[in-house]
Length: 293
Length: 146
Image 1 (tube, rainbow over the protein chains, first blue to last red):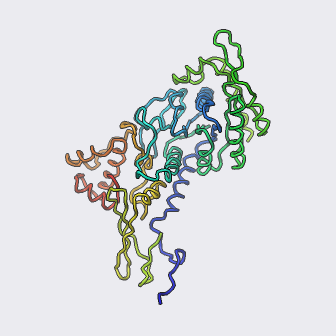
Image 2 (tube, rainbow over the protein chains, first blue to last red):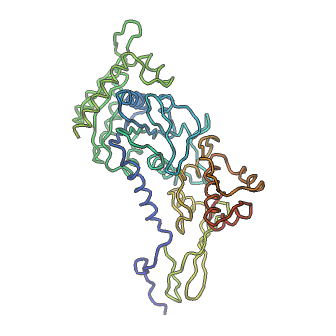
Image 3 (cartoon, helix red, strand yellow):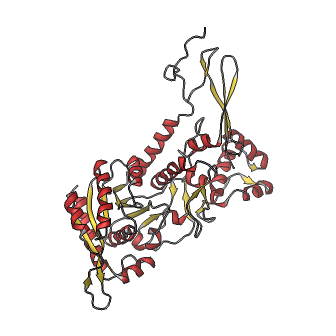
């Protein structure tokens, strides 16, 4: 009769593969990299099309103009827009021993995005076996996020903004890598449909123990480029309602400003109109919230 | 993971890893007592599951490279996405055939691959990188697609 097989734990020799140790080392590398970053803040929403990337880019630019060292990690891997909004175009990324050097945009904002890696008009795809790709695609995307955190030479930063895609899945991945996330800024538009979707994402953040730094109501009215008055654009009051529900402040109400949209698409932040003024208020309010932590 | 030789009740040692390039992987383990070898063969799906984590069965054979997972697995990467530093003076040289072979590596990942081969040669005092050196490195280090 065959003797009892020893178990994995009983066989005390080295586990040469050390898969767990390799994964642990990856996490440690993220921690080491972000040791020089004072605050990591995620910008999220449960709803698509509310202008998260605009808010992220404009906020980053405003913070940087104010003298802060700011980075933007575009975690919207499938729909990257933050880099262009910050004036960063495609070009070779310098690879040093220590990591990939992030290019700089408006006011020196350091940026990393899939937009800088993918050929023009090419969607995010992976080299993978033809079948069952859904099994590992999420893992690959989480791996990309991890490498954006750990393998980019972010350097000393006062603030790293992570522009999350719509939904809540990537927030969970981010928290795996950064348990000490400073918090989230949640973006909505005034409409009730947005309020309902964003409310769900607030619950996810709350359940994960993430600090909700505040709500930003984007497209809060239409700023007339001729007379400067702000007229209603969407029915609803989602920003205030979400702030009440979450107990977090409404950090800013940013009107839709055609000049800001043109400026952002051209890599110029929020421009100089009504939206830019609201973004200045947002930056000040967020700094207060971070200082109070 | 560990492999146990049942007859000898000894843990088998990792010997080598082979990546034939078809998405599969072979890892060879040998019993230090009786010399018996076994090969663990994984299909493309199993291989992909592991590599998606950015880890290597049998342990790492080369130091991690910046954005290694992204560069190894992203499809449709911009050819000029990365600019590797110029080789330092005294680095191994490349003969024409090796240089030509390197051009067949997708440009998105070429710089990283070049650095791995150059480090391999430098660590062994090899002054000239030839296709034979690349084959040996590929076999020893278990480099898929390089």
